[in-house]
Length: 93
Image 1: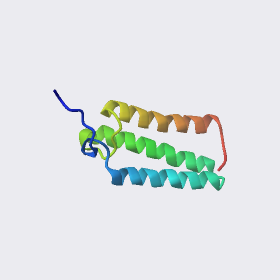
Image 2: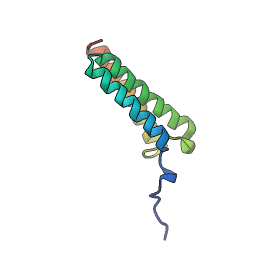
Image 3: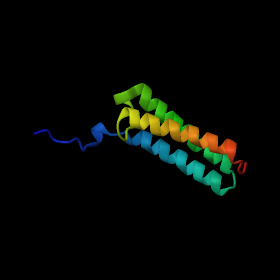
């Protein structure tokens, strides 16, 4: 019987997750200060970068949530979707 992996050895790296948490915090502060467009761009770029990192590095990636294809698709799609929404619905600075 095989035991499911539940350790962090098979998940993302905490140092990379903290970097993403800091990026989200910065975007939150920017949005709070009224720079909503800038905050959205920060989140969109972070999403695309994490998706590309997962796609390029595959199993060596410091960013892991599910499978490579799922992580890459969700990250890149979220980023592209946010950029599309920014183009369609102009907001803030």
